[in-house]
Image (cartoon, rainbow, N blue to C red):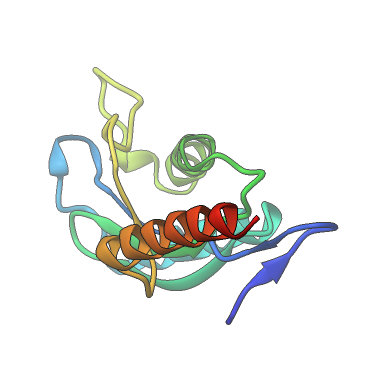
Length: 139
């Protein structure tokens, strides 16, 4: 099992996260793309979040990351989008508009990543419940 550890915890919490620029503008190319990759990499390192895989496409960003259980996914995404927007506007002021200073759209997509299916987890829990009942009857 590939897992990380904290002082008294073993964990493997992986997430697929997708977010887009405001109005899904196709602005993530060239130097902007390279800068966004570096900014995301830097903020993930700062928060001790491992990037398993990532892609910056012309109108969205895909990340597969491993986030420690003490860190909330929504807090991480808010931090990443908020801080990266400030840095992007510092490096590329031409991307600002006179109406808004937002770079990323408000929402994002997130799903868990795992090697165990929902059915397998349900079956495991049911088996544990049956074992507990069998043990009770033996006593």
